[in-house]
Length: 426
Ligand code: PSV
Ligand code: MN
Image (cartoon, rainbow, N blue to C red; front, side, top):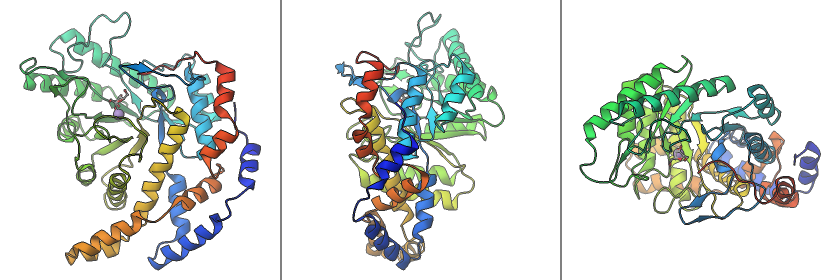
């Protein structure tokens, strides 16, 4: 299944009757704040988010997994699926690979395929949370933190291998997420585990090419339920500082205890120039990996408000790597990812509408009510016409979910791949 220029042109012929009027209204409304509508459309159009190679198949829980048919069973098919999303939205111009789930067989062919879909290779992810078939040493009791020298060394070597794979594809960063931790008090010496982790990360850092970045992801619990070595942003930040200038913290929205003020974490990291990457998803209770913006859209907006502020005011922070990290248990992953991309761009667009000068003045006046009004005025603006305009100007479709359905993409994939194919991943 390939979406052609002709498909897109045909789909965009019929326009929503109110679309132009909505744009006109937005232009007038934003103009009053001194914001140029076209500037916002351009920024939104440029905002690209990497799709994780592990999220194109059906997700599951430990209670079961329900496929929907037509799952991509090879890396090539995964790239084809991302190509479909990107053709419809022009907002998913990158892939984030998880190794060893997605080791390319033929690098040249994979690069050409990605190029044909206009897809770049974003951060590569290592996996030391599962034992691989034939592995000499186990990660049952940890990887980079392990008290067993051979397990630690194997985990370091795996990360160096992942860097080599990414390097051949044009990736420029490595994301390390560690499941390392303990299930019971007393099981592990906290300090020894941390020291081993720091030493191992330094070895990995030293093995990266000079233009690479290391992203250190944190998570409070799961799969370990008593302690996790890199449990919070502070630990990640400390380890990133220990590694060096090109090591950064990666924020995954699902990796916080309930009600954590994530926007404040974002602000702190950007001020320190250490926010390297971002995994988008949403959650109600824990690391639920739900569609972005489906549960806490206002929290997402507040996070984007800090991201926009940081991108405008913190040149010491590099442009972050944006990725989705979600799981799709009951929805078609491609539809779910399209919905997530939409939610991310909505949050970004609304954050761009915050009147920063007025907010600064209101903050200096300690006018609390006005501060809230200013934020909520932006949040409550319906920006969907802006997203539509950004898509149309980039050669995507006006309404991606409707297009996906009218082109019967899933049925076509089921016809091509059958109902029993299964994607690698969790
Ligand atoms: C862990 O929960 C995580 O967020 C990490 O990014 C992993 O690499 C990813 O999910 C996929 O399992
Ligand atoms: Mn993640």
